[in-house]
Length: 597
Image 1: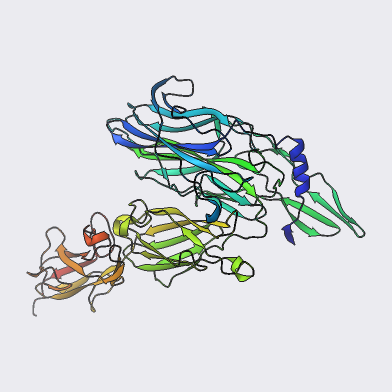
Image 2: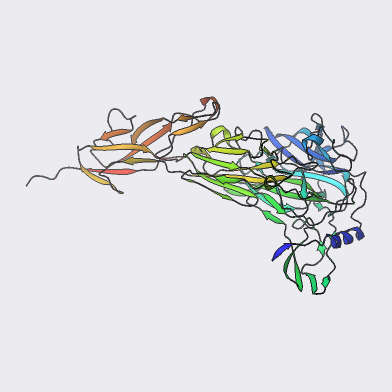
C-alpha cells in the first residue's frame, strides 16, 4: 500500500524553528529572464522579463541597467544600456476571473504578482558575451536566503574561421506563467517550452537561481520529520522515515513530503521525488507542506527554481555553445481544499501513420510528413462527476499564434489547431496535422493549460504537447508486370508506368477553415543520358520506350496549399517526401531482341 500520510505538522514545526517564516517586505522581486534577437550587423534587441511580488515596491524607470561583458565574471562591462519598460505591467491572473480585475488585484491576504517587460538595443562585436542585470531585492523564500537578484544570458558570436556567427536566443511563450500556484498533495507540472529560430540544438539542465555572476543563491536546509512516530499504542503502530536531512538544491528545490509504504505495526515513509523530464522540458512534483499561518509577504510556501537552456550549433564542422538563457520560476504552495485539477487530455486518432502517447505530464504525437491526421483532445475535470462542483466550466489556453507561428504549427507547415466548447465543462481541441516535407525532423513543443473556475485559486493542469514529424513515403511508381527489382525489356518495346500518391486526398485550409480536395502536378524525368520518355511528361501515367538502360523519376507537387489564403507554394516531393536529389525508383534495362536462328 502506498498513500500520502499527513505528517505536515512535523515538517512545519521544524520549518518554523529554522526561521522560514520571516517577513520580506523590502525584497520583492521574485525572478526574471533575459532573451535576445539578432537585428543584423552585430546589433541585438534584448528583453528582460521581471516578475514582482505585489506587496513590494514598484520598479522605477531607471532601476535596471543592461551590462554586457566580453569574457568571464571578472571582465568589465564594455557595453551598457538602460532597460526601458514597455507599456504598463502585465496582468497576472492567478485567481478566478471574479477576483482578477487587473494587475495586483485580488483578495486580501493572498500572494499576487505582476510582470514587467523591459527592452534595450545594443551592438555587440564578435566576442564571448554575458548580458546581465541585477537588483538587491531578491526576497527570502522557503528554500533560499534573500539577497541580490541577478539575471543573465550569454552569447558567443565569435567568428568560426571565416564564418560569422549571429544568434537568436530561445524565446518563451508569454502565457507560460513565471509564478506557479501548486496545490498541496496534488501533482503539479511546470513546463519550460520555447521556440528556437536558428535550428540550434537545446539542452535543458536544472540550475540554481543566481545572486551574482557565477554565484548561485544560498540554499537553506529542508525540514525532515522527527522519527520514529508512534501512531497508536493499542495496537502498536509506528512510522519511520527512510530519508535524511539536507540542503535544498536545483534537483530538490521544494519540500515534497513523504508517501507511506506498509501496514501497521510499521509504516515506512518514502521521500517523494522532484521529476525532471528533459525530453518534455518540464518538471513534475507533489508539494507536501503548506503553512496556513504564513503571511502573503513572507517567504513561507514560496520556492524558487531555475532552468538553464544551452544552445549548441555546428559551424564548419565544430560543435560549440552559441548561447545560454536561464529561466526562473516561483512555486507558491496553496491549499486547494479538495478541488482537484482537470484531467490530462484524452487523446484519440484513427489516422494511419500517426501515433501518440499520453503521459502524466506530456502528450506526444508522432506524425509522418505528407500525411493527413486528425488528432482530438477531449478535456474533462474529475470534479464535474460530483456535486456541488458538477459542470464546472473549463478554459483551455494555448499560444495565441499556435497555428500561424512558423516555429510552431507554421500555418500548415505542420498543421493547424481548432478549439471548440472553450468555457464549457467539456472543451475539445483538434489538430489537423498535414506536415510538409520541409518539416521533417522538427519537434514542436508548447504548453496546453486547462483551468477550472474555482475561487479563489482555479484548479490548473499544464500539459506539454510535443509533435514530432517523421519522413513519410507517400508516392509509388507502379506497373502490374514489375516486381521489386529492375525489369528487362526489349529495345524499342514499351512499358506503362503510373504514379500513385499514397496519402489522403484532402487538406485543411487555415484561412477558410474547411477541408479541400487535394490535386497534384506530375513531372516525369530520366537519369542523365536516359531516354524513352513520351512527348507529354506531365500526366500521372506514361508509356516509355527506352533504347538503353534508364532510370525514371517522378516528381509530384501538391497544388492545394496549407497556408493562409493559398499563397505560399508548397515544396514538391519525389515519389515521397525527399529533400535533395530524388531517390531512383525503377531501372528499366533495354536490350536487342535475340537473333533468329
